[in-house]
View 1 (cartoon, rainbow, N blue to C red):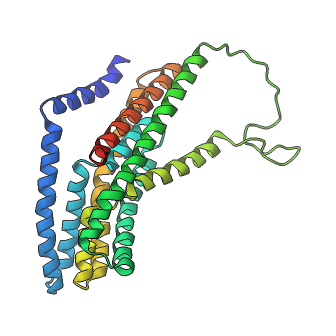
View 2 (view 1 turned 90 degrees about the horizontal axis):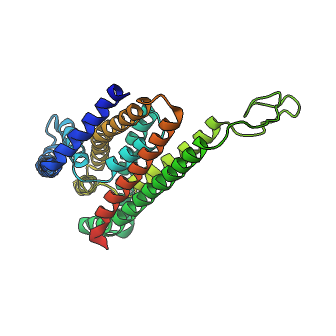
View 3 (view 1 turned 120 degrees about the horizontal axis):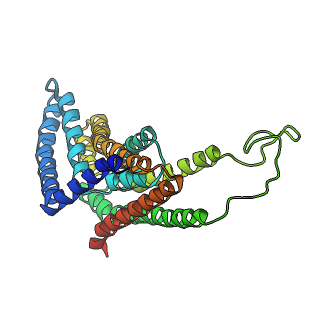
Length: 306
């Protein structure tokens, strides 16, 4: 069992070492500098596009994708929420990666709707749009993320208590047997008597996905708003919409990596033990840990607004 756990321990030691030497601060600084550089490159690409220079559209898409990547690497809520959700639930790697992409593209959609809605209906300036995003939509998004973290924490605690009580509960029970399995169609009445575990998982997965996407997407990316407003003013609006979605894909390139890492870490920790009861308790512990991390990050992001 210890041999199977060593990759998990190695990852934990590595993360602690990076934190101890200030690596995360250096990473945030590097990401912020990258965003500034690509903002300048974005302005040059927009001028080239407006002037009709060949290859300008492709250059703008590349710059927007890179900006989204650096934006996701820096301090933010999306990757923490996706990673925490992947660590604390049983979602498969492909489903979680798809959720990461959907969240990033939904955030780009929010930027498009909000920017053009504010311009066309309210006639707001760029500063008014950005200020509203930072003062109202950002704290709302962080509050929703804290609620998701609290939900993960409570669910993990409930699973942990249930696992402990189950371990001490006698397993000999009298059962009344039917001629059909759970969730199968009864031969006598022709109906299902109860939903299967798979049915319930589908319902919960859809609900969880919508909440997760909403918590991330409700706060549009400032860089996407910048591109959308400038391209509208330059009368090349559709190129701005394409740029916003390119940013979303750049962001997704990071969050998908976080999702894959979270699922790998979770599965490695769970599969390292043979006892089913211990595995359930490890899963509950990971869910509690994920909830605490998400809550801590959300509260840190909320502090300037309190």
